[in-house]
Length: 186
Length: 293
Image 1 (cartoon, chains in turn purple, orange):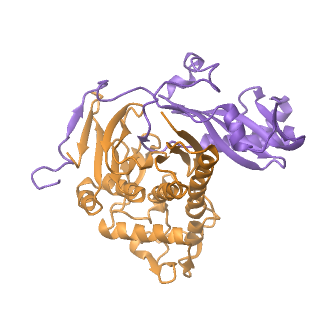
Image 2 (cartoon, rainbow over the protein chains, first blue to last red; image 1 turned 30 degrees about the horizontal axis):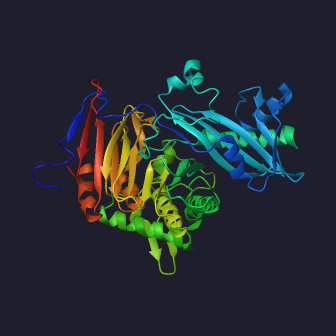
Image 3 (tube, rainbow over the protein chains, first blue to last red; image 1 turned 30 degrees about the vertical axis):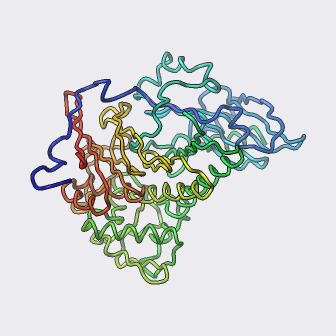
């Protein structure tokens, strides 16, 4: 393999010119792990009913949540489901999304009846160049099919070995879900 | 794509587990739970961030008295020592203070100042799974524990009866069942551009600065320390190592990143392969260096 005549780290095996589609494939990576219904089942297998109960916080509540979670509330409304099994209250299913510098993630937090985190599952993950995902047009192409439709993009890409994407934003989101429970679901 | 995939936030990244078999649903769910639990266990034991972890306990008291550790932590510390020996110190788990100074790791209030002269040789592994620090050094297993977690999750999948699947912890990954598979490597300066590489190694890991670089001492740096100079490495290139265990792949990326020339000798020892990608400034091209070429 490595001999004295040719040092692999000194001589490139190949040089890929900029943006040659044959060598460097596909734009962004995307994966859908669970639909909203599947995530509900996975996080609450024993549940019999999920009652949509979207949360609209008053400005006062929002500011308490922000203070506790140390992150800003984004939308005015947070999708939340009350989870029941035969009339018994099991907990809450909170749906949320985060925009990172490189990624866009939809995920769900399951809280038990006491408000403790029971589990976190990623529903949808997609990544792209930083700027694009803040553009409304870019986001609009996913609207309406975010929680259901199959995504074709990048389906053949199974495994990417790349450096770590931080899940800091999800940790913040989980903290926000806990704060929401404290302020509005107790 | 057949099979089922799940992802959960663990180890400070997204851990994705895929099961490609056609198993009954309950079995698939159980296999996912076991594999994710294995990753969560490694996180609970070896997190630098968590003051309750076994690693934090070592960092607090092992320079005063020997600390008895779990089987898992012992295995990782033993492997780390072997890698340090094989690489003549290019792999070193005592670089945490440099990462703290550069902001890549948190500072804990109860951490005492380190001596500054210690290295991996000061981590003394004693009989009875006991660890003692000969100097006031601080350990970070961030360069190896993630790979170990992936190996543990794969073992759980196999025990749960899964024949074909994979575990990917933010780019440190291992496949189960598929002898030849294709991985995609990110272009170091355009990380959404992917380069496919086919390999027979079950595991791979990548070190690169593209998602976590920082300005430090006037340079763009990534969280990899050159143990010789104790400074941060440049963030421009990426190094992927293919190996038969993810722990080995994970640790070898740190060695190769710090010193490709000396690191190459270690590659052969572990029957591993390295692919290094280096962007050409201005042109947008990418040089691909491959130890198997």
